[in-house]
Image (tube, rainbow, N blue to C red):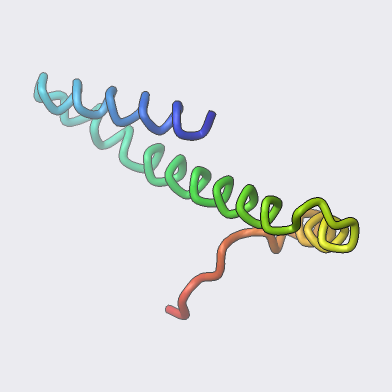
Length: 78
């Protein structure tokens, strides 16, 4: 689902560029950035779930991370 939303936003952006609609491209820039981040986070969560192999202990760890807001991919220091 996240990929579909990202694709749609990118198509809207391309149409706005083709028609020379600068305001729409400026409006869509942060939306695309946020959507891309959401897509990355969803892929990371899915990968961790697949890696867990359905093991109850691993699923409990994933659940605790999601509850604590620590489920995103690792980031490099600024």
